[in-house]
Image 1 (tube, rainbow, N blue to C red):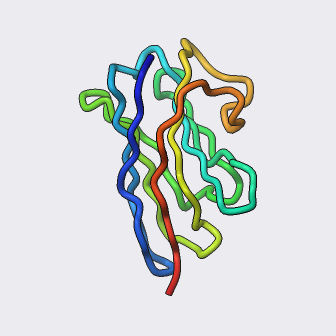
Image 2: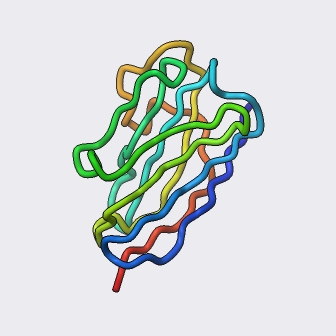
Length: 127
């Protein structure tokens, strides 16, 4: 089973940027669908972005469209989430997730679709 480890979180001011990374223990490009999720205290885990169809397709939550970009570096087995124009409401623990997937997922932004999770990295947006 693939193992995932997130990094890159931290404290940033509103309007700032961060890039999160998720290192996978094995090659994931061709055989896994990948996603980023976040969970704030007292709230349910929500899907932020997903990448699938061997990297050809992406999906984003409405709340982050135009501000966040998901990508993957196949040579490094690493998934990224570039976050720009950050808002206080983006503050949360961010998790990457994966599932064996040759094509696509019915609900790529739903947590139930994934079976492997990292430990998370905290993002705090505050002045």
